[in-house]
Length: 378
Ligand SMILES: Cc1cc2nc3c(=O)[nH]c(=O)nc-3n(C[C@H](O)[C@H](O)[C@H](O)COP(=O)(O)OP(=O)(O)OC[C@H]3O[C@@H](n4cnc5c(N)ncnc54)[C@H](O)[C@@H]3O)c2cc1C
Image 1 (cartoon, rainbow, N blue to C red):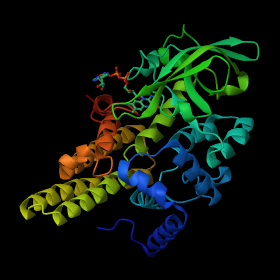
Image 2 (cartoon, rainbow, N blue to C red):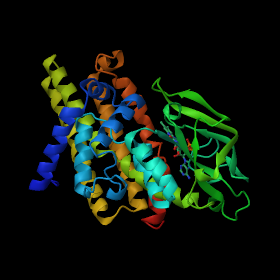
Image 3 (cartoon, protein in one colour):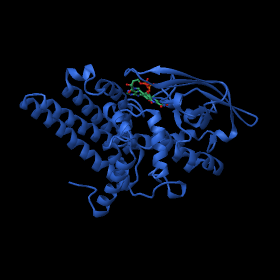
Image 4 (tube, protein in one colour):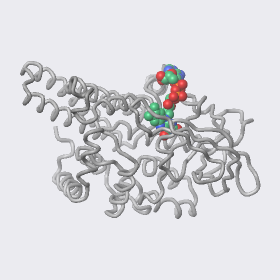
């Protein structure tokens, strides 16, 4: 069943394909195809390219630089970008910080940040997790103390993806430690990473790459203009943002791209003499994953039309990240010993990084708790 198959959908798909064929550099495509990973250099360059075409932020309101595309067009765009091994729009800029500033920021913040987030002039990163606050995020301790003209920030954020390559960080900070409910004493604050007192230390991941960091704040002075929305309302803004993040991590296009990669790998192993029976068994497993991805796509499309709700975003995140891990693992098996030697691109690196998708953006166990209490009512 072709869900997005109206003549307008087909025309739009052709337009996106033509754009990708004309603008996606071959070396960038190759890097992403072989590793499933997007470097920050490629991300910044691609964000600039998308913005120059007016496609930097597909889901933003048109008044703020969005495209005006409907839900189906947004899915076609995401799908085609993934299938072409192109980066998506920068997740922290476009899917997280931008929508929060559009909805809760003031005019000056919108005027300063939105064009820069759109064109990659600013790259932002997400400072939510702390050494002692991950799943239980509301227990966070990094503090912002009110002083004349702003706040003084002290504490530390951890697992901050791409902080070393970013210009600004958006943080959840404790502004009221005496609040009756811990969620009620948290504010959403943006901080220039060049501010005195900010230190960024690398954390090398299981995949051997540097994408993670710990960020330290020692008496960092943040002007009042860094507060987004109202003081102590940051938890509400974070919930709004995490709903967007979890939808993104459903990653249907990204999984489809890995399916096509696995098929390509299987074909090359068949050419090299893989027994037909083994190849048929693997083809069957790929088809099963593809069927599940299709079912998830139908669900996502339905939810996008209805207006995504936060609990459903958890559902998409759980299933989407499981399917991504299944296909990446299957590709490792198809590659066989060669995937360990690196003859099949960087399959091992991709496999090791894929272990994180059921953790970041809220772990699978915690998403299931949310679904159990809010959807099933347990
Ligand atoms: C690759 C990667 C990139 C990341 N990028 C960022 C980023 O850019 N910015 C950012 O702020 N954070 C980032 N994170 C952090 C991520 O959001 C946290 O790792 C995640 O929320 C889990 O928190 P934790 O690591 O403290 O684990 P914990 O909360 O300590 O959990 C440990 C284990 O216990 C389980 N668990 C916890 N509570 C429950 C419960 N109530 N019921 C059942 N099981 C439970 C969890 O599922 C997990 O398996 C990233 C993490 C990774 C791995």
